[in-house]
Structures are given as C-alpha cells and as structure tokens.
Image 1 (cartoon, rainbow, N blue to C red):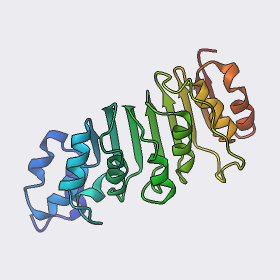
Image 2 (image 1 turned 90 degrees about the vertical axis):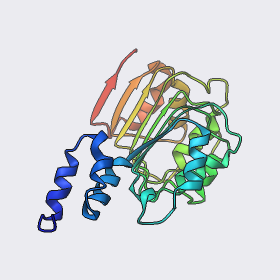
Image 3 (image 1 turned 120 degrees about the vertical axis):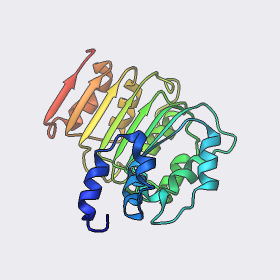
Image 4 (image 1 turned 180 degrees about the vertical axis):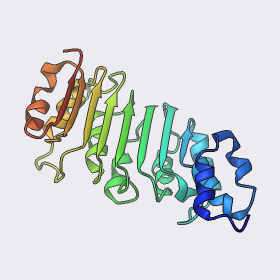
Length: 230
C-alpha cells in the first residue's frame, strides 16, 4: 500500500460510490483524508437541532472535517429558537463555496454576519428557493457576498408584501456570471435592478415586464439570455 502514489489513491477514491466512502476512510491513513473530503464535501441540515449539533460537536479547525465542506444545503427550517446558529455554523466552514437554502427562515441579523466578515468571502454560488424573510433581508444577504458569481432565486413568493429596500450607493461589484430568476420572483428582480446588479448570463422565468430594468442594465454585457413565461 505504501508504494502506491497518493495521486492514484485519490483517483480511486474519486470513483468510489458514496456509500462506500466511510469504509475507504478506514483502509489506511493515506485513504482517510480524501475519503472524508468526499463524504463531507456537501452536507445538508434539515433541522435546527442538526445545526446546533454541528456547532457543538465538530471541531472548528483549519485542517479538520469542517474545512472539507464546500457546499451546504439548509432545508425546511421554518423558524429558529437561536437565530445566531445559522451564522455560527456557516462561519465554521473555512472552505465553503456554495450555499443552498430551501424553505427556511432567514434571520434578520443574518446579513450582518456576512458584512462583519464572519463568513461568506468564499461563497461564489447561491441558490435560494421559497425563503421566509423580508425583501430587505434577502437583498442585503445577496449584496453582502463580495465574490458571488452565480445566483439562483425562485420558488414561492414569500416576500411579496415587503417594501423594496432603499440604498443610496450602488454596490461596487462586477457582473455575475449567471443570474436565474424563476417562479414568482419578480420583486426580487426589481430589487436587484434597484441595486444595479447585472449578469453575463440571464435566465428569467418571471413576468418580464417587471424585470425590464434588469434586462436593460445587463443588455451590454449579456452573452446568453433565456426567457420563459413572457
């Protein structure tokens, strides 16, 4: 086993089915790290209790399990007894690049964690569906991520009655690589247009008349445009 190059071991583990990875991590110490990186590459939290257990039970070190996580999915958490838990959990993940949130409550203080630099600098991909929060909270969260490249927003319109946030200065950021709005998300489109967020690839499956400004802002840089439900 010691004579096998590490690159070959890594290639073997890359092709092992997910259910066999825990066994692979027990073969030798040279198999353990790569196996655990795949096991914990994407993790899902479906309750506040699971988020809390992660914060209390998993060591937050720069070279341990928490550093293996690249993609987090948070699903079906309609309320929080400890709103700060969400920010604490994400702040423990030093290698996080993708965040997906489906049918969860976004605490009002959540964007503050990002703006204070507690997490979010490495996040390049954000997928939001059917969230429970006000439009100012949702927009602030999106605009606070400094290196965001791909944004998908859709699902049931849970922010329709919230007013558009006000802001006097447009954020200093370049265009996104991808912006996809689908389902009844036209107010999100209006808010993003208000802050002059643009994208090279636009995919809009909403009422087009309500996102006309978003189209006009991005018109000079769009290289691909997909329209549905016009």
